[in-house]
Amino acid sequence: MSNNSKEQENTPSSPKEPETAVVAEKAFADYFETTGRKSFKQFYYDWHIDAMIEPFAELAEYFNRRYPENTSEYFDNFVKEYTDSVNTYNIDCEKFCSVKSGIPNKDAELSKIIDKIETFSFEFRQFAYSFMSEHDYVAEFGNWTYKPNYPYSHMHGLAISVDILNKISEHYASFNNDKVAEKTRYVTDNYLRTNIAKDYRYNARYNYAYRKQSTRRFVALRNQMSEEYKTGQYNDFVEKFQVETLSGMSYGKYRPNGFELEFYVPEEYGNYAELIEYLKQKHGWKKVYTSNKNPEVYTDNEAAGVIERDESLAAMKGLAPVEYASRIIKSKQDEKECLRIMDSFDKGHANVHCSLHQHVSAEGFDLNTYKRLVKRMMQHEDMIVGNFAAPERRNNNLLYATYISRNLSSNGKRDYPFLCVMTDMCDDLTELREMVGFGHKYKTLNIMPSKTVEFRYMNANFNSRYVEAFLQFNRDFVNSAVNNEGTHINRPLANKFNWMQNLAEDNKTVLGKLSYYYQKPYDQYRPEKTVDAHTIYEENVYARHVADAINATGKFGYYNSWFLKRVRDARAK
Image (cartoon, rainbow, N blue to C red):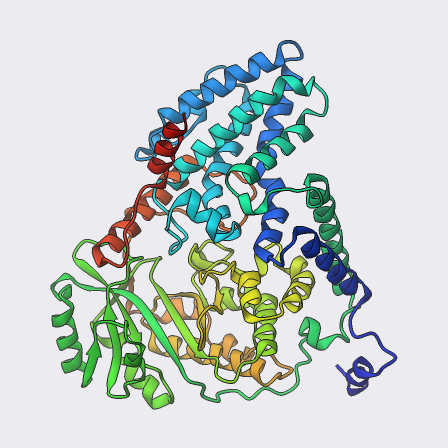
């Protein structure tokens, strides 16, 4: 971008931001004023809820069209069959992970709709975890706010789908075969807000009609901004849309950081005291801690870091799960010493769920620095993750690191300029954290820590040179945002070190096969993209493994929310 363009952006006669962006900001201001709170979680809930509940509208319309006479009786009978099928559903056996298998007399269209309702059930807990208020989420699912996966959450979702269908059944006869789909949408939406997402209940001003109208308005603005952005109309608004001018970048400047490596060791080192003693002798380390409860362990320059159990890793035959967290690394020499963990054994054992996370110092950040970093990550996220991470971690397939650019849809490039407006609407870091990660850490870029930002998208790897490149790339990325440099990413480094290149030369990393495996794009909230029985079954197996590991560590207890819901429902009757 030319200097004249930069000057033009700052002249009094030129607009500070595009007109459509101003309209979008006013639309958000009206929305927040009408809802009575500035909550991005509520906005996301309202944005996604129509797609979530659409299968119920399709079902109601199907029966209205298929059975023009005695429609409500046919619908009531279906609800009973659906309920019976849910009551005999066995999520612990893949063969029986299908509601439609227990429902007779269904044609191809009805069968597909049932699959969509089952997908609603599968998605609902994650939807609630992301977008409902914590108060309402805890009331429904219990105090399991720590992890995004939850054993038997699908069964909880199925129970909610039964409740919704019974509520529709109560009203179906009154629809009188008129606007059945839209009336069903209202009944379903209102039921969820009245009974589960209670903090988002409708009132005189914030009502169903207003919510639908405002959502349509936001979608139109999102689409208009996307077209204007693609045609170059925003090129002069460098700061707002983080237009990359490709001016200089200070590569290689060291910024304090640290990394966490999840991996497996031979089972004879499952006793961490023995593992630590082995590591100290092999690497010449003076100290290794066994707990991070006191954060000062990371600032002890005589210690290599912390070895402890990672509760997200399931047991593997002949191996013991472990996580190594380095001390705060302040120089290349520090980094070299901590990276010795890669050479602890002849082979580095991991599986596709093992991660390599990096924390980079946020010292000196102000709110604008965080916003700049967030925008740049949203803009380059596909390239960054695609360059360094294994294929199974791309495109939102990793539950523990979903894309921040895809909070609105799976088309992050289209959504980017609208997300920039949302970013600038945040008045403090708390609001930005809610807007970016829904108040959770499980994103490619995690801005929840108080003193660092965390990159969570990378898989465990034991190619030291490749890991060095990954660590440097992220440090350069952060430094560029801090210094507001025109070049956002270190392309020469990314071109030299990428996943395909690493795959060809890495002869150390050994990926063990999991007893469970599936690929599922997360954070879609689009039940029309149905899940199959294999995914439902394996997701629950994985969640059970995580719960077992958490129980083993004693960090906190797991209890079955589906069982508790059934108890609550029984007491209510």
